[in-house]
Amino acid sequence: MTYDEALKAIRNGAIAGFLSIGITIITVIVVMSGNVNFGKLYFLNNQAILISLIVYLALSIGVWYKSRIASVILLLLFMSDKVVFFLETKKISGLSFFIAILFIYYFAMAVKGTFVYHKHKNKNGKVP
Image 1 (spheres, rainbow, N blue to C red):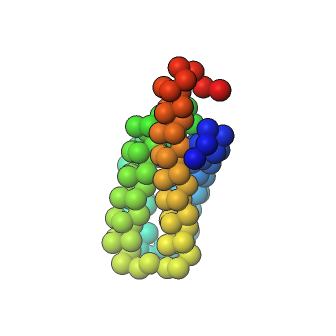
Image 2 (cartoon, helix red, strand yellow; image 1 turned 120 degrees about the horizontal axis):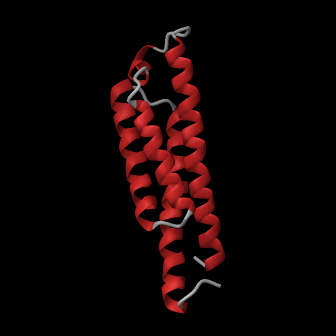
């Protein structure tokens, strides 16, 4: 991965994080409104999800600023959240699984990008 590819991967990973936050906010608002019966998504009707959103926001900002730690934690947190989600709902639809894999791909590429970025930075003493 070149330096420019690393920057693009980092940017895409951060954008994926912000997009994930947006999707979650919309889903939580719809579920909390109580107008729709989502069945197994009842666990989203919890104010503690806001803490999770704040953590995701902080990590996504960290990825935007090229933090290796933030990118690794964001990837691991997203993967663990998806495992819990699929275990709670006991249903894996094709679309939700595909979207989860897509986000995992972008987060994994952001991890790789942050490490390549810092490798170039440490090698040259500065970034190009």
